[in-house]
Picture (cartoon, helix red, strand yellow):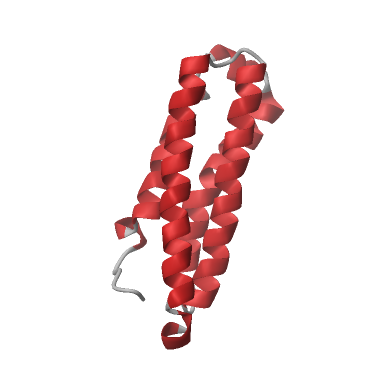
Length: 126
């Protein structure tokens, strides 16, 4: 499939994982620890993107992989929304939000590139 032997080689997965790890760091903070439902929602959203990229990689063909990549994109946007909410609640600073937005944007850019690649190669790989 598109030259990758392992999903861990895919830049979009690597950046999604980096975002997940960054969110994991945040979730150790006391403010997040006290808000169980919010913490769980943010954690699940951050885990969803790399999980969906890995699952899509294991599916049959680029069309189905692209569908899972689009789901991952939605999850990364959900993470961004949760981070904006964290800022609104005073859990993270302006500078932290800007830095995290950069991590999200890098992950999204890689996913958009992956989706384009998969959609452009659907006919020959589906």
